[in-house]
Image 1 (cartoon, rainbow, N blue to C red):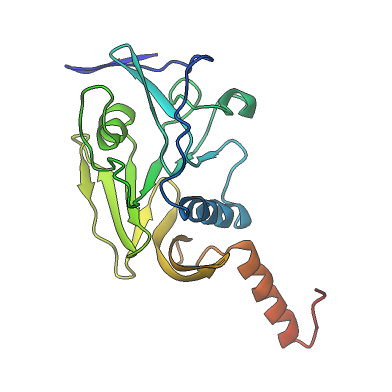
Image 2 (image 1 turned 180 degrees about the vertical axis):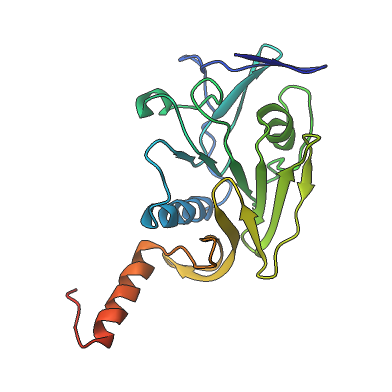
Length: 228
């Protein structure tokens, strides 16, 4: 499949089996925990369809001017894939294997990762790749240490515009039917800022342990001691 612009020829091709993927370690020890927390609450709430794809530090591919480009966002959500899980266990090519991600996220760390790089020359920057090549509708940049959250939305001119949060300091992600915002607390021995989901009614999507604790409290309230 092929898409053309005045300057760039974008081809959607499967990553060759002999392509060497970047195997550098993660920039920040918190990245896996932050990503897992986002995914778990979707699963617990039943908001992760069977044909959806959630990626964490996983290659999303396109070919720009006949050169393969692979970026691995810290977290991404694809609403629907059209191939088996086996075919995307190593990398994912939008358009060819399924939908464009509706949202990609980058968690800032002490290492300069180029999250704001709009460099168009090879290898292109992350911002340029998400905005101009993939045309991902929502791009999120999160600073875990300070809780600072930036949400960018692709406008009609195919450029990212910084969004303002609502009165609850959250952002409506229309493609997912959920709000995204920052929550402060403790999970898995990490106390700090987390990204969380809220439904259209403002209800927090719970993690598994939170749901179990809430159920236990409800049982105790009616005189039933839950089994541990």
